Image (cartoon, rainbow, N blue to C red; front, side, top):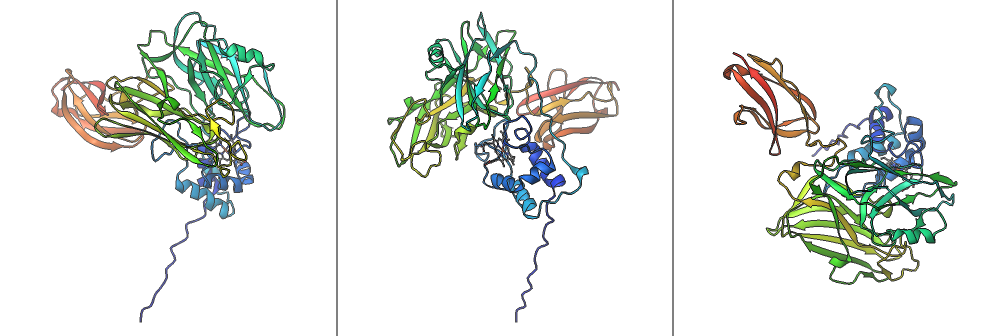
Length: 509
Ligand code: HEC
């Protein structure tokens, strides 16, 4: 006879607000969901979050919130904001368990939300010179403003920072730069301030994706020595997406431009793949789901800074990758549920090298059936390329520079001119001059495997202290005994991704 004893695993305790939920909400939601920001309700304390508990469980469960469309399993980007499956489950368990509070002393700290410029003092502020009146009709609205930056000579632009005037209605901004003056006629034809245009600017400006802004994205400087350009007599085109509002509301936003003081030798160019890279005409029949795949073979080694796919409402998904002539694949981006409302310029965590001879593939799928809830036509119609809501686009923009050795270590940063590899700092060695035991401290911005060593004056590594050892994020200190070193000057060094970071010390025996 078999006696089967069923042992129930102990039930984990129900998560509580202060201990488990507050860190998730404050770090992933509150930057948009607080008073004066775009999120339709504030989520910044227990009563607000509890009041929307069911919705919070629902929108996180279906991964609608936070709105981050790029698949993090395919490629990570700067500003990535996604919840782990465990966090989503914690929210569900908390709600299902009756939303217990826990101990207020354990509430997570609210992140710092800067109010002014994140980057410093701009060289030029390009402002809307009027208030735009956004009607209280509960409709999305897309308005282009033609702004004069007043630039009289070619300037090298090392950062472009959008500042929302009225963050409760500014949903996203597409910023173009134009030297052709074609926007003036469109502006003149619209009696309102600016002109209405949905998916683009109504013509092809000099630069379509000069900058893109969406709430929660951090403005950044280009890596040292890199810039975009702005030309005399050029115009900044600011396309604002205003979110539906139940009341008449006003906005006057501005753009901060930061200029490089010394000529930046590397010009960040924006290129794009479009219908020109397809082998079939870009036209989408009604009641069909169709995919278009474009390809482009890169003639020289390049470093990619960012990628930005762009479609309208029939667009459903994106996949972009590159295959080198040796057959190696570099994954670029995957978006399974394209959403026109949440289009970002996705900045790579570090510049991505694409070798000469590689072919970049960009594939987009369009769902022109009536089961696509965002289909602008009912019943579905033929859809062609164009700027209007019911038109479509196939664009994938890339910011790039010609490749140079070491680019893989570079990234866009809020700190000007700094190489923001995850090594933040090496602390001064103590005691110095040294004999016997010394302490060497360093701080990593991310947990990393690094190699620690001692170098002599000529830069030669004379001893490896640790090889490829994982150190956690934050400050670490190691002890080292210098009695084996002759009197003289040395460097404590950290090798990270092929680059060395050093701190000098003197041994006096
Ligand atoms: C980048 C800004 C942003 C972030 C981050 C963000 N939201 Fe939102 N949220 C919005 C906007 C904008 C809307 C309204 C438009 C929409 O529904 O897409 C919204 C809508 C909502 C709604 C209402 C949905 C509805 O159908 O009315 C809920 C609930 C919500 N968010 C919860 C969250 C939670 C929970 C998080 C964090 C896990 C979060 N949001 C993160 C911008 C954001």
